[in-house]
Amino acid sequence: MVLSMFTHPARTEPAPYSPEPWPEIGETWKPEGVTIVERYANLAGAVVLVYSADRDGYHHVIACLGCHHLVSRNKDRTYNTRYTLEDAAKVANDHASTCRALPRDIPTRPDDDVARKLLHQWVLSVPRRVEPLTLYLSDFDEERLTLQRTNGWIEKELQGFAAERPDLLSAKPSEYSSSIEFTLLGKPS
Ligand SMILES: [Zn+2]
Image 1 (tube, rainbow, N blue to C red):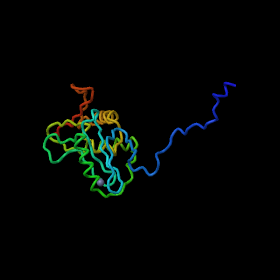
Image 2: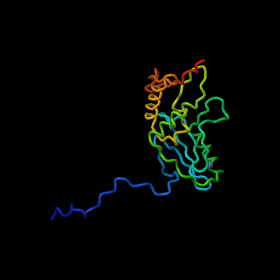
Image 3: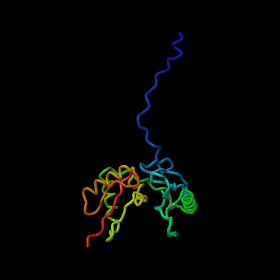
Image 4: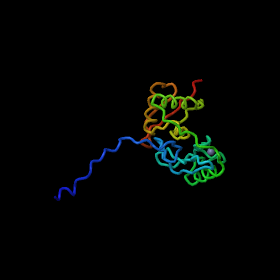
């Protein structure tokens, strides 16, 4: 019987969802909206991440999942303060080789209502000046492990916020790219 060659023993269907092994301390964590570029282990095994949240992947953030070390800008510089991958790797490695913090729980993903409120709070926390101020998605780079949302989601929600608060925020298509340009309006005098 040739056909019998093609008969396989009954197999159970794989479960549609298999959770990550517990506890997750960041070795395999893929938070929504960011690209994890590198991972280092600190002296106690906690993970130090290098991630990028922008569409082009030029800017990098260093985040320790043991202590709360989180940096997106090089404070020793006046210009080009954002980290290239090379610089970020060095900072992450230096931190990992001195940090003794135990792994803490990785941040849980907030639901949409909570994420939206967080985003609104961050916009409201930007110091408002007399002059209008362009807001870039990259201004929120350090919040992305808390927010865990895509750039598209953030843009859509910021547009919604601009519609709700036209006195505070404007949103219009950028002249230079396909993205939306957000402006924190000048403080009324
Ligand atoms: Zn640390």
